[in-house]
Image 1: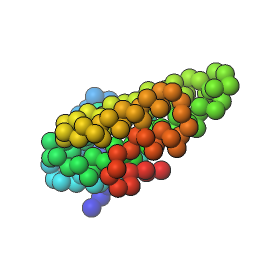
Image 2: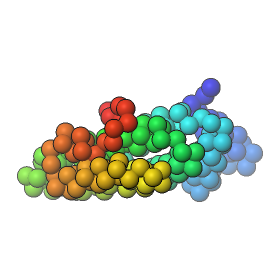
Image 3: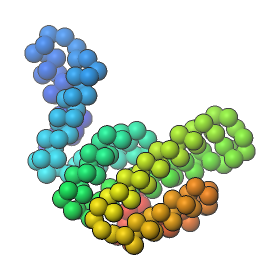
Length: 174
């Protein structure tokens, strides 16, 4: 089966030929959303998880992340919630800690990048908490909140991740 990117390119090419012009930004977004939804409906969830992590592991993609997490919550797919959001959270927290040493020393560019990376990590924390709460996993929600507090306190990376990731297999994704 073709990758999401390959299918998207084919779909865009077909649509552009039909219209006789390049597609506008909003048309591209609509087509991408429709393709994403069709993959969800076709059960290509694991492929979408890999695609979202590859494209948005460190930043961006909030609509795709929320859409995929919503689907996983609605299907009550706890294992994939942990796999997807655990990997996403790990990648984003690590992205922040790559910037943090220089940011803590006052390097302006690193301070700006660290602030952005922290916001991206918090988006992942929030979506993960929301997903766990929706499944009634209150103890894991509290564990994740503890990780959020440690992240906010800028505890060492390993302590943040150890406190954050609920016991659900390996959700560390590099």
